[in-house]
Length: 349
Image 1 (cartoon, rainbow, N blue to C red):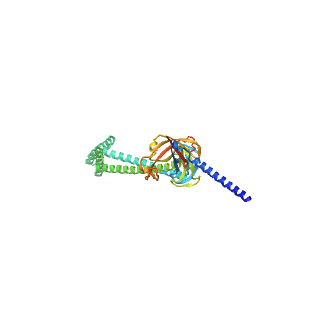
Image 2 (cartoon, rainbow, N blue to C red; image 1 turned 180 degrees about the horizontal axis):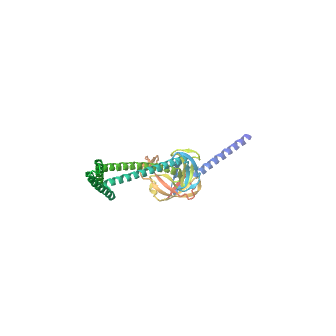
Image 3 (tube, one colour; image 1 turned 30 degrees about the vertical axis):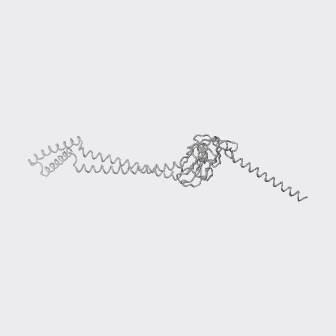
């Protein structure tokens, strides 16, 4: 009798476990089968959203991180700052080079101005005042020579004195001639050569100045890149680095996700494609929020064969049925949906 009671007890326990398992399986099945397919096509996909990886254009040490995971940010908001002590020192060096190059350029321009002035003087000849002065000196020496010559004939002055005055008269004559005729051709050529040389030096100084300015601009650009701002609105969904950590170019520091317009792409059989159109409103359910129904809209239907994938089926006899990707944009006003969540879409009849 005791053995029979024990057998009955064990049988009842097994039956209870079996019923519990079947009930759980049915519940699980009902949870997954979120839409009634008789009301419209049902497809499954994974939610996606626009994500941007934040990285540094320059290698360095992270000086400050201004955000943390879960924080909403706006485009242009400062996120991370890379330490810039070395770049600041390079900027000071670049500024010093620019100032030195500016001084050299100004000096070279001064030399060009002086050389052109000398050439103009050689080409234009002496001024009227200089010609008048040379004429007066020549007249004086001519009259002086006449008097000395008369005195020499009378024996009042020596021949040496006469020759000295004659020499002075000749110099005065040549001075007057040069003042009237201008510089000789070789003098003009020499002045032109000086101008050419000065212009060449000025161009070289200008080139060095531009090079120094470019170096300064490069350092300033690097300094600007030490401040990393958000390129889009969104939520910081991941922070991959800490303050004080060394980062290299291209290394991901954080990730921004735009949760305003998530989407899901589902595969629709070609035999059902005629029932779907752009702009068509759909219902979306997510297992994480089983009681909620989200609104969605068809924003893209792939048409190129490159987007098509074949899958084995018996719906079309012995032939495979091709399926096409359909992109659904989902309203996420409360921003509860996240990339990676499973989504079920129903295209209503």
